[in-house]
Length: 127
Image (cartoon, rainbow, N blue to C red; front, top):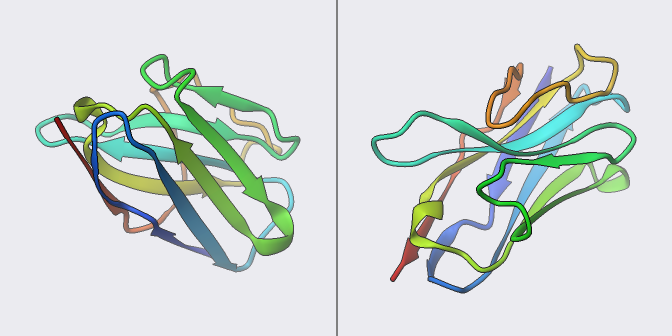
């Protein structure tokens, strides 16, 4: 129903910043939970940040104070501003969406359950 395409990944030194974007197309809905998720080499995929239809946000403990999730409904876009990047932030980053929860994001991150996924954008942080 919904197609998601991430962009903005790249290679950055520790302490730097990146801004990831996710463009949504197809059958979009106003009441969606949306979020960012990542999978580092040799680790399981984990939830990073979510934002519900009311704009309420939630973050994994590992990124609190450093990352900010936001959205632009008019542009059907999702963003992740990443500051003070660390080598352990190196991962493939995915955006995802779900409309099963009445627009809420009822997750205790890093745990999650999402229906629609992008194909990812790679973020590499060097020391």
